[in-house]
Image (cartoon, rainbow, N blue to C red; front, side, top):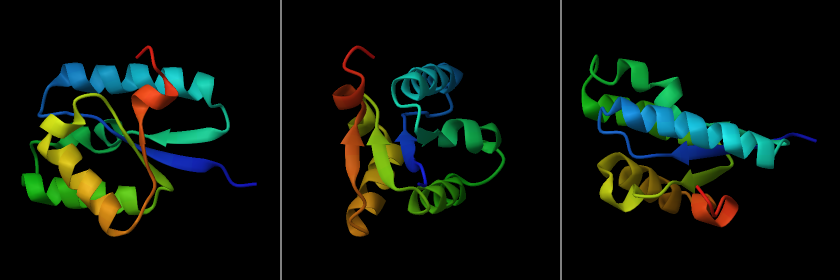
Length: 107
């Protein structure tokens, strides 16, 4: 049986502390849900955040999101332009959306 793949939407804004927070969250998630894959675009694409125009970077993120089974939103997503774009993209294609606090209440 194929594993479900969650796209982890975490605020970034070029702040490396957010990258570290996303890593910490993914490490907890893989322990709690060992048969699930968690894709963090901050780790997958964040290293070239300043090398291409913002909208092109978001196009890369949305493409990754399309290939995942579900969107997982982290705390503060409503205040993040990128997370709001990811949320809207998931809504448009009727992709399931979850919230991190429902899976890991203590994060």
